[in-house]
Image (cartoon, rainbow, N blue to C red):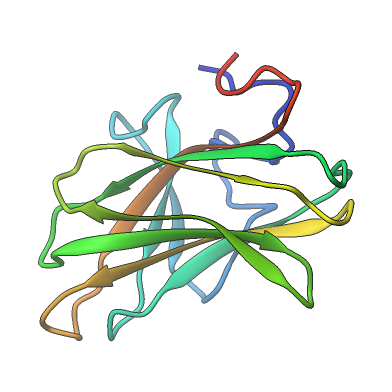
Amino acid sequence: MALSACNVVSNPSFETGVLAPWRASAVNVATISNGTTAYSGDYYLNLQTAYGNSANSISQGIRHLKPHTEYKFSVQAQVVPSAVEFCGVFVSLGGRNATINIAAVDISNDGVWTEVTGSHIPKSENEILSIFASCDSEDSSNTGNVLFDDISLIADGCAYGLA
């Protein structure tokens, strides 16, 4: 499925087969993969979480936002079954001086896609969208993997979701 033309996120489904223009918080933690695991299309992002139940993230600068206009956010997320009990997905938007958490959810490691949603009213035309994942395990030497696909950020008044 194609994402809405109203979506301000670049490479929202990773169908280019590369991470850009997304940036990962650490080297070699974000991998673009393809196959039937994808929520839609052929590609998805596989984000490895950090040791010690800590988060890794991807981020992207979003330009030409309409300040004081509500934007709806959505992403499909899946925790790869492993030794972790569950993973948390957290989403923030903002600038250098202030970020606002717009979504947070805990997802079990059952391998099922879960929609994570939120909303945000930007204060400026340019903000940074960040998506974090951390997994909880009794053994802090375990890492988890969270898959992401179909990321959207759509202004109120535009058709929300998939076109």
